[in-house]
Length: 280
Image (cartoon, rainbow, N blue to C red; front, side, top):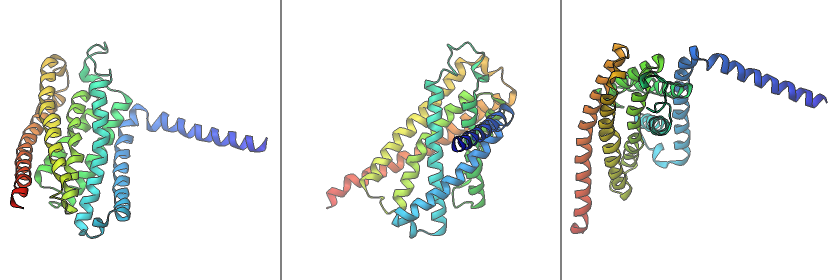
């Protein structure tokens, strides 16, 4: 009886703590702040975990310079974020009925849920963490284009999180993060001295198609969706409207510029692989 009573008391204590988290930290007034802080904390955890795993299982890691190890861990952090947010974005855009035109719940530009907001908050936390690292070590982790990209992303996602406006279009843009793991893998393979391997070539082909779909064609889909729902978009606050029209357009231009570099790099790699047998 004593054991069962203590067990019941512990269970009740855990239940009370869970209710406290649900009632306060995950309630609407605090959800946004909790999710952003969780994103920052998760980014730090993944960064440290990347260092721990790489030290134990990758011999290449120990031979890197200090700044290379920082970038290695940073890319591990960005890969984890990309997998999470692109998965959630694909779910909300194509599978969830939250933003469906068939759902009679007001304009799609004002729809949100606790899950959608928490997901965006985690993403904001990541962008803040990564932007701080980029600025602190500038330009070791990326040039001005990375600062602009992360700043625009953080501002747009944060606005959508704290106002609840335009979350659908925010998720559409965040689907483009699906290309980040491949970009990071390219860097990992290059750093490990595997630039001439078949894995590097295959990864380059994957980057080409992923970038074409997620950062070129998807943006065409986004602009067409905005056009078809123009009246609902115009009901948003002027700041939200500017973000919907300006940020995706700016990112689309940057995506096209980077896509040109990707095409040139892939063509160069393919040319080298084709000419290699002839030289032997």
